[in-house]
Image (tube, rainbow, N blue to C red):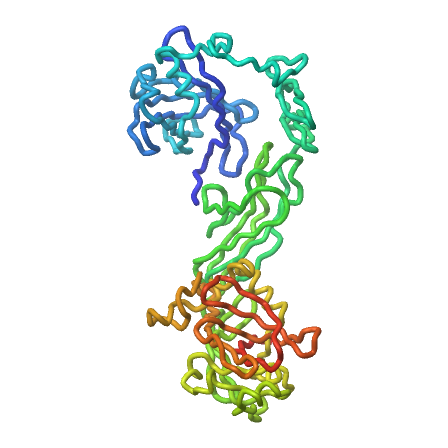
Length: 509
């Protein structure tokens, strides 16, 4: 998302200026800020107002210019319809005949080199203007209504004054008198209250925040983490990151929004160029102002730094990838031997397989055709054998590393999509059964559905990919594993009996 160098960050339609004669007008207030979020104070700026018909890209029915001077807080106040008219007649606009939009542009130097700030739909204001000419219009005086209901039995506020704020508290209506100048309305302990703001010596401040860390740096991705350590006494309405390839990025660079509120937040930056330095600043906005963190420079890795191969003792070569700061095999293990060159046992029928307490492997359905596609299925005794199942310098992943991988890609409900290989068996471009829900494989992990051998019986080829971890469960008959399915985007963690036959992916020490 791009932001212009200068932006008007607040629009407040106040009321209709009902002149004795047309054209009338409506009030407009805004705060002009520079690209770092600081107000433009005590200076003349140029404002161009355009009223557009039917859509944000519609025909310009009215255009006018203003050259106001901002006050000590960057505030300007205009009456739309009273500026230097350039196009159209404000009094001739048929407010009730169409939908209208207002487009605001600004020149911070007080000239006419305008930059568009944004376009918004006009809502109640044109209808108020339309009421000036509409037949049989309501005068605005509640007493003029012929069928006015008696509301006295519903709301009775003793001593209510014009401008009071009415709110419901416990079991009755209460009133909050209008606040004084330079006071802000806040909610504390569930009740509204006015708090004095002096913009110099005040109990309210802009937020305080910092970039805390990065993770998941690859040739094309960076994850940045930030924390708002102090909301400044007011609700944080917007937070996120500004970033780019130039130092000290601002709102005129790339912007990623990350919700609202205090605390920690993170954003993932993808499709980046390899071996490139990017600069990041976190930002947060409350009712007092916007704060930027110090910048952080992060350089993406080269593609050769994030992909590779590893060869097992049997001579099988596997593609590997750096995922979430950990090197993973992106193909299922298919070795017949332990790391020391000794053979792993195989050739057991259903009953024999279930009774095993030593390492063993099997082809799915005892059919060698599946070896090159899905690798081999190993019981957990082979995983835990001291002779080593993984290639030299590699090991089995821990359950915690599996959790970290799952969290890195959004949690158990969605992490399967980025980790599953794409394509389907029905379409001939993959190995998962339709619909292979959510699969994007943006991680490069390329999980395949090699099925499992459960109680000696083969199950779920094309529908489920089961993978061992190196961790036992508290129950000595069970060990931990993780899995993906064809009809969900989830990534599940389970415990299975150690004699089950599952696929294996190794990680680098």
